[in-house]
Amino acid sequence: MIITREKPIEEILSYIEPYKKILVVGCDGCVQPPRGLREAEKLASMIEMAKKAKGQEVEVAATTVTRQCCIEGLRNQLKVDGYDALVSMACGIGVQVLTMVFPELPTFPAQNTVFIGYEEKREGNMYEACVACGDCMLGYTGGICPVARCAKGLMNGPCGGCVDGKCEVEVEIRDWKGEVVEVVKNDCAWYLIFNRLKQIGRLDLYRMYRPPKNWALATGPRRL
Amino acid sequence: MAKERKAFSNLMKAIERGEFVYTGELEPHRSIDLSDVKDWATTLKNTGKIVAANVTDNPRSDSAISSLVAAYLIQRDVGLETIYQLRTADRNRLALLSDILGAAALGLKNILALTGDHTKIGTTPAAKPVFDLDGTQLVALIHSLVYEGKDLDGNEIHGPKPEINVGVAGNPNMDPLEAEVLKLERKAEVGADFVQTQVVFDVEIARKYLRAVEHIGIPVLIGIFPPRSYGQASFFDKYVPGVTVPKEFIEAFKKFNEIEDKARRKEKINEYNVEYFVNFIKEVKKEKACAGIHIMAVGYPDVIGPIIEGVEK
Image (cartoon, rainbow over all chains, first blue to last red; front, top):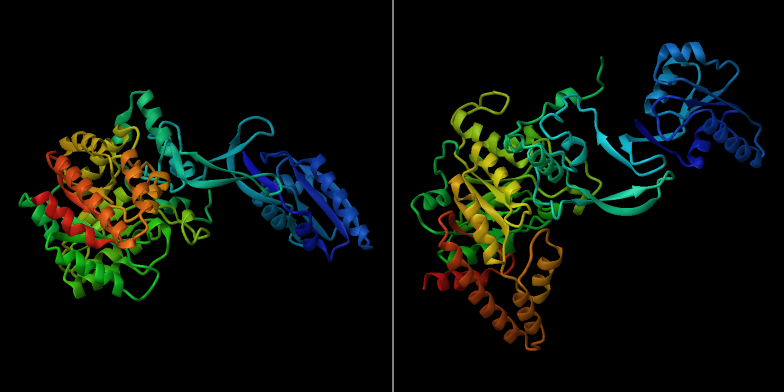
């Protein structure tokens, strides 16, 4: 899933300062935590209250679509007549596709797109685990991705910074406002890989030399 | 298992002759003034026993003058062979190739191929980390340039091939050690000429490592760091990843710290370091895989001569 974090309301307000009729567009696609109609309505009312408190004239509505990353879907599902600006609840892709489909209107993001990851449980910790590198090596690494989960993205780890199975790099765990709630050290991906490959009797895969990665496959903008 | 190896540097030639070698470490700063580093290099050279010295590349990701330039200037002006440390943390494969060819053109004969500490832990944490290659892949690149005259994409270099020996870092403190041994097999397979280890204080850890990697047939230089103060000794114990300092060592330095007369304190610390490390080296020297000692006495070069003399007595 794609993980997003809400932008501060002040930042969103600064984008839409000049506009009077605003449509907040949710997304029912893969973005997590959910950014659908309920969340879009909540943001719409926050914008309305903030603008009215400043004595500004404003009309804010909310809606949602199945996926903001589909051009055809947006054309069929979304009507934007009469609005001055759009605010997208989706990831960075959604913002860009709205811009493409409705070039006559400015579209602004309400989210920071953080990473592609997984979660412990509903509303639990979220972990980055894939960077969409275009050349998956999980078959050689016991199903644990060193590209996303090793801070250095090493192909032939672990490095000397692995101590007691932990990475040398400290990572900030942030809440949905972007505030740091805890600083931790992640598990060393190569330590996990070594143990996993040992467990399944495939240390030959650990021992093998992996040549440099073809980063041309991950160099954007990519197309399919 | 290991790839073709030729000795180009004084360091590798001495190892091939079966000499027990000593190397040193020089840490240039974030400065264009290399005078103090050259003074240390001169002290190392004047021991008559240090065959080559490492010149560090942004150690701990603290920014510093280019290690290529510093390694060249030290070698030229002091006449001490350098081991040019090169880390992949800050350079992609194009930049690495440029620097390797540049080093060879300047007459440098050794490169220590490092991945390097993460940029986030140093002076410039907002930097975009590179890590296009890792240390092992850097070894493969250098080996390919030296023996095939080609980069890893098969692009040929024009004219003579670079003549460079490549060293790698080893970590005897790694737990589990098996993960480190298999990793060193990998590095030897792609062309590493020698291994230089992370700091070891405990002779048992060094011995265990040397025996575990003996089958690889790669010469090992065990890294030691004689501390010049109690603070430095306890820093290693507490903050350097994986390094443990024996309790009696820390206790001894704690006592020296109480000596008020500075000259007397220094004398006691020197005496202790010399005795401790002479015994340490005599023990590890017995191991077949041990080709020498890498002495990382940064800013404390005067302890090196007496240690080596003590071993040779």
